[in-house]
Image (cartoon, rainbow, N blue to C red; front, side, top):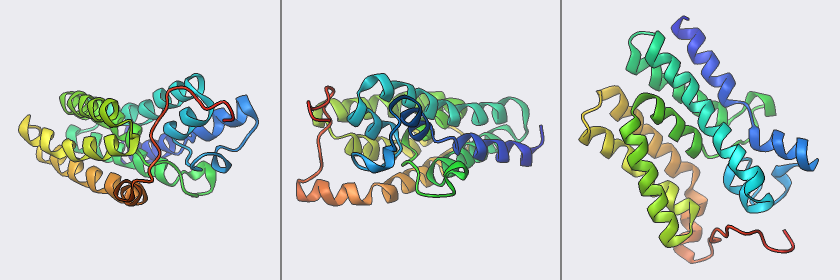
Length: 202
């Protein structure tokens, strides 16, 4: 597989809007018209429950993991190929081809999948950070922001290649940018806390 083909594959996999597709298939509804309007796993879980939320999480992680791992295994320079293929998957998740380049998700799960492919210890540590912040605050957005900031820090501390540290920095900046509205609501105290059980009228 060539480097260019890998990046294209990463973008195409990232463009698979699983939150939109699964809700369409199972509920015959448009996830973009309910809840926060986001196609990502948090909105799917919040609106329809874990039976749809968990599959979306898994699929969104995999679409970042698969191209990143392929790059690490088969396309030299491996670390650079892995992070660029993963970055393409994240770009696809944000602006998916299969939704006409309309606004997609906020890339958190897909970013986690990329790091599992290129820097597993970073992914595990950031995942634990996400879980800890989420369990304490029950703000998925805050957990995502803090975990995103942890990415380049952990990559540097664990001694991963410069390409991984730089990718972590860019990914953290992208996550902060895509959560800028959430940051505003967190500051004003109007951000919605996550509830594992849907409200009765959801």
